[in-house]
Image (cartoon, rainbow, N blue to C red):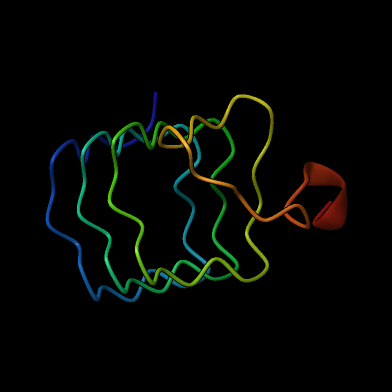
Length: 82
């Protein structure tokens, strides 16, 4: 398991190109955050607030858990960044 940011307020944070693989971001407020080019493989984003978040070029996989009803970018598969 990675870092535990459960319930953290990270709205507007610049986390560009960070390694958040395996992190727990359950219920975190990420409104307007910049997560571009971030590794989200295996990250738990259950109930995270992702309004206006930048997800350009992110890396994610089938173990990444997204908030219910959230449609993640299709271009963020592992093959795109290996």
